[in-house]
Amino acid sequence: MEKENEYNRRKFFKNAALASVGMAMAPSVLKASANIESPSHKKQNSSKSSVKKRKLGSLEVSGIGLGCMSMVAGTYNPTPSKQEMIAHIRKAVERGITFFDTAEVYGPYTSEALVGEALEPFKGQVRITSKFGFDIQNDQRKGRIATPESIKKVVEGSLKRLRLEAIDLYYLHRLDPNVPIEDVAGAVKDLIAAGKVKHWGLSEVSPNTLRKAHAVLPVTALQSEYSITERVVENQILDTCEELGIGFVCWGPSQRSFLTGRFNEYSRFDALDRRSQLPFFSPKGLEQNMPFLRIIRDWSQRKDITMAQFSLAWLLAQKPFIVPIPGTISPQHLAENLGSLNVVFTADELKEIRTEIEKFNLLGVRTSESALVDQ
Image (cartoon, rainbow, N blue to C red; front, side):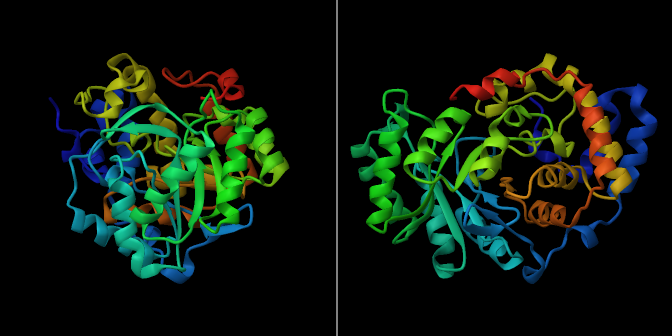
């Protein structure tokens, strides 16, 4: 089994660029590789004062957030050291990140506890989000549950683990098909009135559900998957957010590290790695999808930035109310991600990029029609 974690982004270009997309692409890959291998800290570093802000509804946050799911066991990485992750989160604050994302189900519970401990010294200076909506029994996820009674119960555990009096942004993680969204909105409205939640959001819901929820209680943000490879939310969802004044938070902005150049067509994943279950990362998927990275490499070279920075900057350029939350346990990648806030595209560049990506047929992405159905 190939040990993927042994390769960071720089080593990939140095050692495996040709294997990732085939010999036919060698000239363009080598050219991009040489550019990205050179020192790029001047582009990556962002002082705390220089980190640009964005608004999710009325909630102001750093233009890039930090996803904290992978900082605990259970998803992608070997279990990191708790103390290292606490230091990592605090370093993110020092670098200017004010937006941190976690959920009850991550771990479960351990991600919230980690975030709560790490950010306790920064109360009032940062915005912490969490999510509810899964039925967790004996530390196992058993299904979905978002009854008003369950919501009012689980928020108490989240508040305790996060060491907060009020959660800044509290999302319904996934829709419970047995509970009308109006009832969920009503329950969160009660939590806001009780001072336990400040803002609320939804995740992976259709435009119709978003409208129904917003009519009962104004929604601050919708969090759904969005990247230059997974663009399903461009079918009515982003337009609905814009119309209603709802912010959009992107999870998966690097397509689970695919867009950073970390993998090649021969990459394989351990059964415990979430990617092993996804068609996009199957042997056939990687073979078909890997040439897409030529677009990312070529544009990264043209803009003199890394592939990760290009992928994040492209998202930021789509709408001013979009905030990506890449998850990373690497201080180097954290600095790199923040550098994307300083990348500027012209209108002509964005049109050219759009033309290129829409010509490509990716395997393992959602259909456009699926955006109109709750996930």
